[in-house]
Length: 429
Image (cartoon, rainbow, N blue to C red):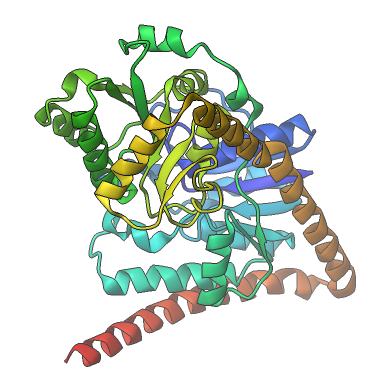
């Protein structure tokens, strides 16, 4: 099978979408399929990438670490004519997402969209952020989803949100799976020694992009509160982003600089070692659609403390493989870390075992098999439809209809956002 994947983010960008693409791509290849990825250029990209097409892009858009491609889709078509994709899979509803719809229509092949992100929680990266902007991106992404043949939701929580918002095409819940490499057993003591962490320290860890939408202020407040009370506690942080200096300053100002260990952006091999060195993994983001780093940590046998949210509640079972905090209360979060800290060796062992069992439920082989099954079903449906409707006029009509639908979707989203804003203003008046 030939899969055309279109995404506004890809390696070396650090984030859930890029990691998701890499994992599925590796598994598809392992099973003998081809996956051509179309993505924007990024600084420090790998050289000589196989089956990757890079488009010119604006780097670090509006102060973020995202890359925004320039509208030059014509560069794609010679490559696509040679590749002859069987299915198009878009991972964003904007920019390259529009191009994905056009390609699917022009080639009369199925179009799948993975709704990775609750986009309204990322509008602070766009100039003119407002309630209207948030409403606009909700309406636009919902309308885009309804232009696709199927939508993949990374968790049941997201699928429920999409249904309530009016997505009426088939929605399939398929999380990004965990690769076998995360289950490798590592020598935690050796990694701690190499990182300057005492062998008997209680290590609290976190991995992720260090950005405002990740609720890191709250998480760090709870962690520093716990660490002030327990001198043997250390914090191990992996990731980069606009908040890394602020986080470091916060720990130093709290007198915890010597027990703060930031390892920056590292590869999978080092991350596996870091996860094994942790006694508990902490997570407070409310903007996730799935718990990728949670299952990674659990694959290493590390229990997780997190705030209840979409993508999180599907992974954590309270007091079984970690602690799930119902509300965002710093004292409760700190107390949950303390619960793990004070747990008996028998309970700690049970938590680690349950964590690994949970991660096994989210294996990449299982997730990839479900995606491929979805592709195959849609391809067969499209083949039958082409046999019925094949003609010169019918071959170009889908592209005309797609262009109309794209513009209509933008107009409808803008109208809905303005009406919603005016209604809210009238209520306040």
